[in-house]
Length: 588
Image (cartoon, rainbow, N blue to C red):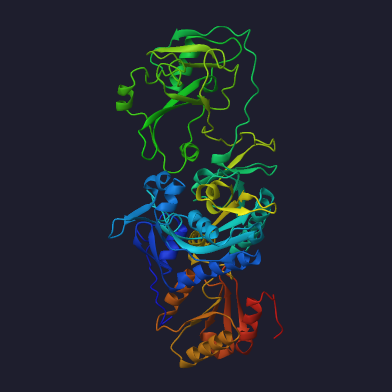
């Protein structure tokens, strides 16, 4: 450690929001260069390399072959797939000295597709799986939590190429199984959830989430085993109902009731029900957003949903797609659309065929025959007994209402519980989206041109370091799993006696020769400083060579449990090798 390029900090960095960020910076694993951009220092790089090693071993085990594409990419392939436009402000764009457009790669589907197209032309060349571990770049508007959400990050992305859907299914399953082995080895709790494909496209999509209260992703799971990212949860819509015997819609005065709460109060006061009181679930809330797609004019979108639910902005973002920006209607927007009466908007003016021309999408619960209280499009008035399918129709359905604890699972497996997670991996059955856009075809067994079926599979390698740290730390610092730790054993030499440092060095050399990675604290620092640093750095096993040496023993500490034992100095090396190998005990 007297030679190691590291400096531990006694205070938390000012911008640290989560434990992993705090400890990785304080323990000298990473260093902030700019918002969302970090340098990897020697200890951090060793951890990163250990994660990459696990990823490589499991990818190689399924026959995938490693390649490396450039991070600086030309514009043209991304134009062919329209992602140059779709990404909007989410990518870093630049021009060379001749004025040609480039981007810093956010993902590499196009490059993989074009390279295979250039080299392979027959079904005999397939199946094929290629992967890379490469730096990616995305212009995150809100980088946060250190390396969990950054602008520059390291990913493993792999792509499978098959001649038909059956082959794609096999490649998908092989990658999925490899991912389970990767995350089992990385040492944090994870869950596999159904996900939306989003801008990636494709028919099948799952995420691997590290379960963590600081995760940006919300997911649900049920007692019966259903699990999904909240964006992908499908509503159990009620069956359509007959409405022939329902009373006609009628407009009533509801003064000073522009909110759901005031509307419910007004309805119960002026239009009481015989069977029960009105609730927010009886009302139809109509929310209007201004949507801005890349290179297109902004346009309004109205969403109708039960009044006891809010629009989940993350779900809306996922449904609108990559690069689409949106915000609720502003005062200026309402001024430009006088037909919309704020607080009293109803379906009467909404819809592409109605007076406003505003596209109107409704929650799946708004089924034909359902009866609602909603705005009457004039101040202080609402419509009662407005029936979907009879009195109004929507332009389509959208699933963006908030998902709440206790909602039924779509597969009937019980009530949903909401939890948080960090997205660590994502697998997509892309199908032919990129192959068609870029002309990747091969001759099949019948001599006919077949569009290649592709799969795309990503692992957040640098993010994994943060996820592991997040789940393996305490009030004193990091506590790395053995397979991830930068060093397996940390030897602390305490005191000024030359014999102590000599014995510590001797033990370190013997462990090194036995193939055990070891860090020796040979600094001229106080025992307290050394012990505090050892706990902060988080190696799995610490060996203290100090005052006990005169009595013929050293102390061996387990970082995770805090348990310590005295071991005869002559037995220290074989004992430590047994600990590293997972042998619970050895004979003296």
